[in-house]
Length: 325
Image (cartoon, rainbow, N blue to C red; front, top):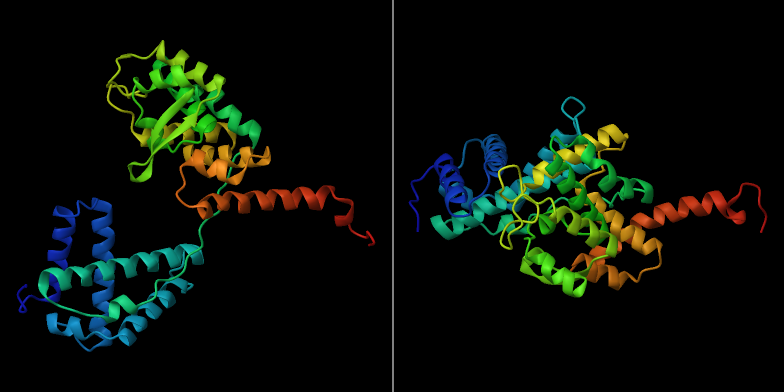
């Protein structure tokens, strides 16, 4: 049980130190939480007529919490400060609620300060963005042309193979970059890759002959094709960082005139959408993507429905203006 005499400011600093040391939170997360908690404390100081001490933190009511959240919403929607969409503002408020909840959980576990009200505070609802797949020609063009922005021959061949794999197998960028040279041995014998996805869950992903040829072609130019080495290395031989691949995609999409939604992850969306357009079963796509829940895969259905509706409106006789039943 912690010291009751600790001030609220000291409690926040202790919490942030704990997040850094024990939870290994990133500097950006720590900075965001520090800002969120500073805003929370500033509001409560004005709302309650003074900065609460540790005992006061335990007495903050659900009504006080809701007043703070309403203040945040009013601030976010103010015409003088609003520089973002309503949904992005809701995501910011959701993060701030998460920061406050984490802080009060820390107080309960490490400082002996209990407050049940924070657990009753509703999290602002946010819309989940629909996937933005590329068209079939654009998706095919990525692995063919992305090497144009590379600075070395090795990087050109590596990026072509990497992005061919992302689109051809629907992998997450992290899944592709975690592959080693040895993983290609399994592919040669069986035509599948063993992928370790989220939660260390493994799945087998079939590899199209064209993708196999691309990977084998890259291996002939791999700077260190030893079994334990990463399949996609950086310039110093270590595992390629996702940020490097994302940067290559940013540079290429600027040359190709594609929108900002064209990212390495959009190739995974494209893989799923194009399979569905070709008649693939939703559960098959779920297995290939490694989704634990079918509802996650169904988001691709929603994305495709918008495209199908557009086709229907433009092509179906019943959708033409002036048509009669």
